[in-house]
Image (cartoon, rainbow, N blue to C red; front, side, top):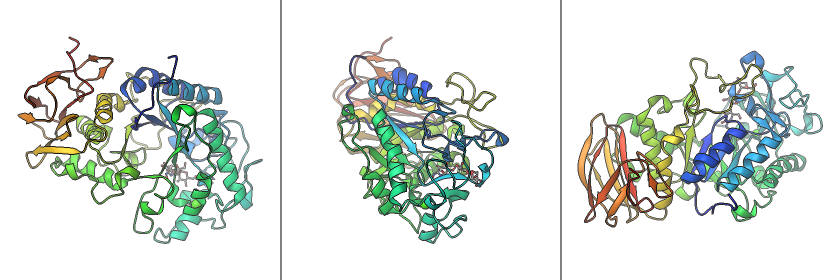
Amino acid sequence: PAHAAPSGDRDVIVHLFQWRWQSIAEECETTLGPHGFGAVQVSPPQEHVVLPGEGYPWWQDYQPVSYRLDQTRRGTRADFVDMVDTCREAGVKIYVDAVINHMSGTGSVGSGPGSAGSAYGKYEYPGLYQSQDFNDCRRDISDWNDKWEVQYCELVGLADLRTSSPYVRDRIADYLNDLVAIGVAGFRIDAAKHIPEADLQAIVSRLDDVHPDWGGGKPYVFQEVIADGTIGTGSYTPIGDVTEFQYHRDISHAFADGAISHLTGLGGGLTPGAEAVVFVANHDTQRNDPILTHTDGARYDLAQKFMLAHPYGTPKVMSSYTWSGDDRTGPPMSADGTTDPTDCSAARWVCEHRAVAGMVSFHNAVDGHGIGSAVTDGAGRLAFARGSAGYAAFNATDSAWTRTFTTGLPDGTYCDVANGTFVDGVCDGPSYEVSGGTFTATVAADGAVALHVGAVGECAD
Ligand code: LAG
Ligand code: CA
């Protein structure tokens, strides 16, 4: 394209977990841009440990050994730069998963060099960090009720950076600003709860402005805070947005149990929606504490569609790969541990974001409209209006739901973006006639119907 698509208020994030940079670039052009996704959360791009003895696990990336982008299992620095440019031209921002609380752990001692060839050892990263740049508590966090331990000791044995030090803050800011200069528009702050608030604030305050196409302001920052009785999300909201894990638990249990009738109130009592990033599953929960994941098929897709229809929070859609048995298993890869290009039609790449792509247009079109009138069967079925801009019905049961729905929509022929997409005036799914504000639909078992004012017109066929 000759010019960047308008960024508008596109805010939906998709986590293309473990995807190669070149595959992300292609997905931005072919799918994410056209369907209105706002941003991609990419896996950590800095040089990382390489662990052939453990089968090149996915979590190599969470053990940095330098801030070089030269070579990770997902490609080169040039590939990364090309991805950022290509996605920006498609109107899609790149958010980097920033691993800045720690460097590598005990598991990788002696197994160097890193993915780009750097020599290292735990607490020794030549030219970057030496022993004095790490906190003195050189043992695992043991008492998670002790805030000091959580922030100054080691998370699963990972060398804990002395983020109170101006030198360390500058090195981290240099890394993040290298990414901003490339065109990166935001960051997920990994393990934010383990970084003292004042330290993280000092690092974030060093960030440069983003690319003019994204408005030129400060980068978007959302912090991974798994709130508990010791550290809540409110400690970090003065710095940026936060992940809301209680939303993940609430929506996942509701859909898993077929008890969704109360979900018009989803998010009530949690972090204010304007500061919350929400998700049905993430790369950790789908392994460590699965409630509802891609292995649950249509019911899980339904929950992600609901998230995109509901006004609370900034939605983050998960896109996964499968594994069996060992949850350390990395993505499809070649013998040397470098990641294969993504092929959504091949085994193991789930690409579940494609199943909910039409709902991204719904999310964008109903922005600013609250939840209007709702109907429910009192258990697994719920439908609601988003003002006069949209209407969506969800059926988390094993049998179809047929009824006439009363909407605030103007009369017309609407594309059902829960079962198809509407791009450039072409609907590739079913359509419904709204007449006198009502329409009659059969919502399939584990299915949804979603109509909005941005997807009006005749069906393509
Ligand atoms: C995160 N957020 O706060 C990431 O979302 C999570 O995926 C990261 O853990 C963690 N924090 C550190 O960035 C992942 C794996 C861990 C893995 C760690 C470092 O879930 O299992 O630890 O990345 O690679 C692994 C071993 C540990 C070992 C450690 C250090 O599993 O047994 O102690 O490496 O050698
Ligand atoms: Ca720390």
